[in-house]
Length: 255
Length: 342
Ligand code: SF4
Ligand code: SF4
Ligand code: SF4
Ligand code: SF4
Ligand code: SF4
Image 1 (cartoon, rainbow over the protein chains, first blue to last red):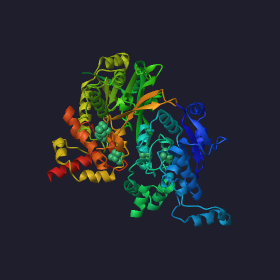
Image 2 (cartoon, chains in turn cyan, red; image 1 turned 45 degrees about the vertical axis):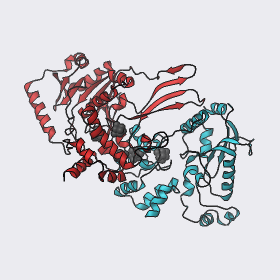
Image 3 (cartoon, chains in turn yellow, green; image 1 turned 90 degrees about the horizontal axis):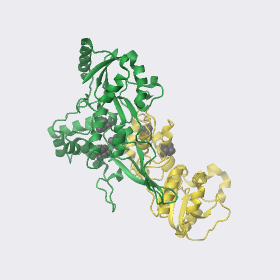
Image 4 (spheres, rainbow over the protein chains, first blue to last red; image 1 turned 180 degrees about the vertical axis):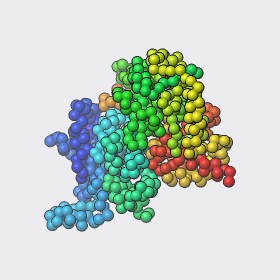
C-alpha cells in the first residue's frame, strides 16, 4: 500500500503543534517510514502546494479572510482534514476577546500599521470546513499525535479519551485542588489526554484542552461560585481557550 | 482465630521484618487531608492513623491501566513485561477496603476467571488495621465495619499495643518470624479491645438504611430525583475511579507507528462516561446524564444485590469526599427512601 500523502499546515497560532511534531525526535524516522509528507513549511523547503492529499493536519485558528480561503483549498485537496491543537479545534486564546470588534483590537494592538491587513473574529476550523477528526491540546500531546498517526495508517479513525481531566487526575492519585483546596480547577469540564499534567504538578487545570463532551458548565460554575469565585473570574477562565465553544456560548447567552 | 499482642514500641521492628515477605506498601500522607498507598522505603513515612486513601487498594490488583499482552505478526502474542509474580505486603488496610477486595474477588472469579487479578491477589499479603470513622464513613450501615477473613493479619489499636488477629498460615509465619516482638494477650487487653470496639460505634455520623432498599430503588426508578442529580453531576468519573468496588474497565489496542505491532491495554472505565453505553451503530442506551448517575446507584444497591446477595458499596466514603459536585450517596439513598415512604 502506498504511503498516505500528508500535509501539515498552520493557520494563526503559536506553531506549537508543529513544534511538538518536530520534537518527536526518536520517532521522526518511523513517521517518515509510514507517511509521505508533501507539505510542511515549518520543516521543509520544498513543498507541493497542489497535489491531492490523504491527510491534512491543520493547526491554528482562522483570524483572517485569506486563511478562510486557504483552509477551504486545503479541504478540497485532502481526503481527511484533522484539526491539531486547541486553536484549530476550539478557537484557542486568539478567540478570547471575540466579543470586542476586530477593528478595535487591531487599533489597540497595531495602531495605524494595522491598516495593511484584515482580521475577523478568531474561529476554529469547523466553523468553515468539515473536520474529520480533532486532536486538542495547547499544545497537543505527542503521544496522542503518534497514536492518531498509528490508527490512521492502520485505516482507523483514532480513539482518544472523551472523559474529563478529573479521571486522569484520580488515576494519578492527586489531591483534588477543587475539593480539598478550593482552587479554581476546570478539570471536571475539560477533556482528558494530558494525563492531568498540571494537577500532577499541583497546579489547577485551566482548561487548555477545551471542553469535554457534554460539559456541565452550569454545575461547574455553581461549584466555583460556592467556593467564592466571582462569575467574572470564572467566565474569564472558561473563555481563555475555548470561547467559541457552543456549550460556553449557550451558557453565557442564556444568562 | 489466634490473637497475639504487638506492643507499639515493637511496631517498627515488626514492619521492617515484613520485607522478607514482599515489597511493603502502606498508607502515607500526601497532603493535609489526603493519603495514598505507596511503596515504603522509609518506615517512618507509614501513616497507620488515616481516614482513607485517594485510591483504594484495588489499584494493586486491577491497576488503573495495564498491558494485557503485546502482539506482532512475527512473534504472535507475548505476555506483558511486568512481573505479575512479584510479592507484596499491603500493610494498613481498613476493614471496608478488605471487604472491597472480597467483592472484587466475587466479580473476577465468575465464569471467566481474571488471572491478571488473581495472580496479583495470590502474591500479595494483606495486613489490616483498625480505624476510627470520620463523618463520611458509613461502613457500619454496609456491614463492613468489621472483617473476619480476607487478611493475613489484622492489627487492632488498643492504645499502647495492637491486638493482632492471625487469619492465615502466612500471617502465622509473619508472627513466628518475629516471635520475640509479640506478647500473650491478657484479660485487660481483651477488656480494652471490647471497650474500644464499643466506643467506635459512637463515632459514626451517617447511616445508610439498607432495609428494603433494592425494592425501593425499583419503585423509584422514574423518580425526579435522578434528574436533579443528573443536573449537578459533571460525569467527571471521579466517583468510579476512587471506589473500591467499581470494577469496570475498557479494553483497547494501542498500535505502534508501523500499524502492525502494538499492545492490548485495559484501563478503568466508568458508567458515568457518555461513551460507556455507546454501541455499534451509534446507539447510546444511557445518553442522558441522569440515566448514568442512576445506573451507578442501581448497580451498587440493586443490580449487585440481585447477582451476589449484597450491595457492592462498602461505605468507605471516598465518593462522598471526592465528588466535586458534592453528590453524596447516603443523601441520595435517603432521599430515594423518603420518596417511597412519605
Ligand atoms: S484537582 Fe481538578 S482535575 Fe483533579 S480531580 Fe480535582 S477537580 Fe478534577
Ligand atoms: S491539566 Fe488542564 S491545563 Fe493542564 S495540560 Fe491538562 S488540560 Fe491543559
Ligand atoms: S460507592 Fe462510595 S462509599 Fe460506597 S464503596 Fe464506592 S466509594 Fe465507597
Ligand atoms: S457499572 Fe458503574 S457503578 Fe457499577 S462497577 Fe461499573 S463503574 Fe462502578
Ligand atoms: S464524582 Fe460526582 S460529579 Fe463526578 S461523576 Fe461522580 S457523581 Fe458525577
